[in-house]
Length: 393
Image (cartoon, rainbow, N blue to C red; front, side, top):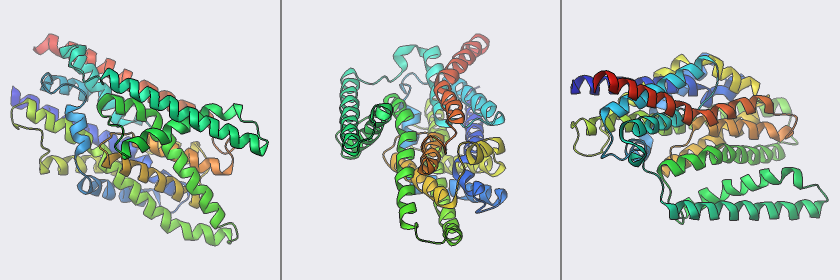
């Protein structure tokens, strides 16, 4: 029975990475398709190859966060992992069919939370320490307040109205403050707290980076012939999309790695949490196959519905999104590639006008799906575990 459960768990984990690639294919190639830098099939193939390379370039720190940073390993069982994986796979598959770009990482985390609570209670979840939460709240308030005051001061000096955009300035302050403190080693966060924080931070970080890079690119190319400039940016856009695909594969492929390794530890196959090479290769292959098939409805929404993308904007969005993913992966923070890239596309679009160039109604639909992902998959995984326990345990 244990061998069968382990086998089913590994299958579900690889199936999760497959639907991950199916949904998140849009992240790497949406802008490339939107500007016709490559045909859709070539773009999907490019993303699949670089998704495969990504996890081999970075460490497996995110796999460790997924496998032993959400539910206490002492309570984690193969049955919980099965229920958690089922909830995550179901959510990502349904949203892919509906053309909704969601976070596969957050779906998995929600599934693990729901199954962990159903199987061992709230005490099995690795909740953050009270002192750490208090410090993070202080940093968030301080960073947001300082940014808002600076923005108000600059706006007053220029004679502009600052109050309508004060909330955005506050969020941008948080976006810069938290990652900066983590990089400087002044703030150490992981697990659930990191996931919750970066639900907000990763899209805003992608938006800010893409906006600044896009404005810089516009300034440097303002005296160039537009046709020649677009032609020059197409190969740069392909390179940036490849870089973003590496970051996507490095961050998201580790989800299955973490779960499979946790299953092997819980099942007694491994004595410690060390990701085997075959797990890395299998997880990379699964996410690449999902990307190769492509989630075309998601691609269409990312490429065409959020904003109209020009080559320089596509380059800015992919380069910014890839940089955010690479930075967070190196820090071992499992962020959403969907969030980072959606934010980057919004930021690139905003270079042509904050209110007019971006279709904020579509953005609100996407954000609503982001908010629902963790609680929805947690509830599904909780129900699956209860039903599974009634039948087999």
